[in-house]
Amino acid sequence: MIYILIILEIMEDLFVKYSKSSIKMKSIHLFFKLLPAFFVFSCLSFSPENKHYEVKTYHSLSKPFTDTLFFPIENEDEMITSIEMEISGYVNGGATLEIENGAGRYFRLKLEGKLDEKYHTEWYQNNFEIRYLPTLSFEGDSLKIRYRMQ
Image 1: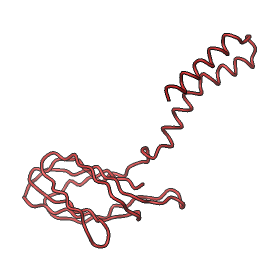
Image 2: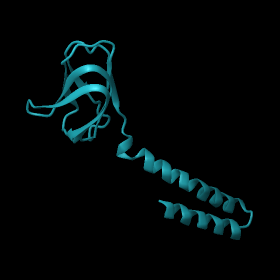
Image 3: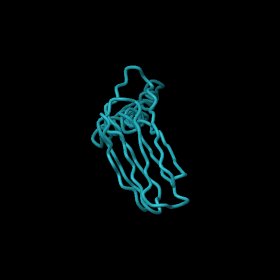
Image 4: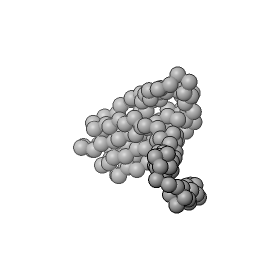
């Protein structure tokens, strides 16, 4: 990317150096000034890393619960092939988060203290189930699950 920007800067300098002050040359000059910004923007906006996340926050963690996390499909042709989750919050005590992993299986994640966990797996549907099971009693904690399907 650096090389492209250097080449564009050299081309711009050549146009400025050898151009007359005509409107056409000023338009070309403006085009080359804006080209790097368009290039960077297009790389960022079409990157799969920028697909938006859904966020669920749970505040009542003293009792077990089950939830189905749903990811809206924006395009009918879009195919989901994986789940990516970021789990954050604080659990003052202990709990287990079970994440559906297909065919009735669940991945179990132990939750304790400050949470900064990531989970990624192959998945082909736009929804999946989680189960929260507290193992020790506690109060006033929260659990935030940020997820997306790719």
